[in-house]
Image (cartoon, rainbow, N blue to C red; front, side):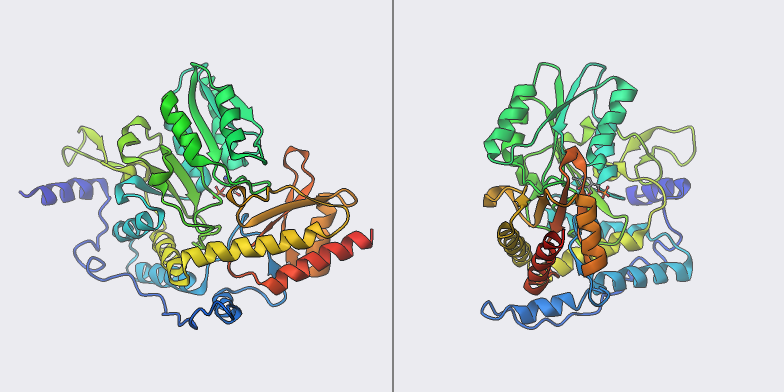
Length: 431
Ligand SMILES: Cc1ncc(COP(=O)(O)O)c(C=O)c1O
């Protein structure tokens, strides 16, 4: 019997082979998303191009959406793909797991990883939690992360504090100097430090942390470095392997424009065996014989962190979202988000009483601006922007910051950003 056949039979015994495998869906590619025709990008008159991009999103008229850092909308080709694949699978009531392989290749290329380093997870939190639960730690071992960590980044470690007696140490992000962050982490390290985690871009104030420099520090000290990149994939391009961390979690449903409940965990190939998978099942590995009792072994790559029946349509659509970004232009998207954030910053800076918390230096900021106004509490400012101006930002209560966060992505426009600044000015004048 060929190895392929043997492995097929084992997987069939586990129920991990869909009945369609080899019969219908194999060889029948997932339905194509409708082709999008773009006007050529003209740097002298770019707004025609950006209007065509904007038309690919289903925003209700009048809404100015500045909360991609919370949740990003999926463009029409991504929604179409998700719907078409889901319908195709429903016609035969199949799970479609075999569609993961092609999606893994596309997503790995998008993130600058190898396919075997990619696990499809449901959100960034799940990726962070797989690392926190799986890294070898004993009571008293120390984990360092920033005090601005999102609950999706901090709770998995606070849980390990409860479960395994891990000691959590926090550093305050330095918004003025990238090297200051490396120094603050280094100052907290001891012989018991096992893990450092940072957000690539912090959620409350959008600070871009110097992950490559922190990776070097961690490597020198033999410490696991995990990056919570919930905010970054799709905000700007990067090659995850080149950043130098051991693992990286990201959301598909924010800047990337994937469907809800999509995310990716990257684990560096050489380091995969160091993370014990805590939740396993069909797809995490295989048995050495068709029936139990049998020896279980993990899948060779990061696929071992996946298990059970999944929403294959969402995973395929996440790959489509990667293609959509490539089609628009990844550098162009990053530059657009950055330029709009700079416009918001410049406008807000002119308003008396407004303080901008996001660093200005280009290496420390990207497409989010967080600001506050002493005269109006953040909750009231946020509410009034929604109710009086149909502008959706994000209130920032963390660390007593009392601020409002503005995310600027490629579907936002200079006109919306100008209107946001005018709205803030009007609200502050009326109080
Ligand atoms: C830095 C950071 N980590 C984790 C998360 C949680 O992401 P998800 O909802 O995909 O788990 C967020 C969400 O805003 C975030 O900003």
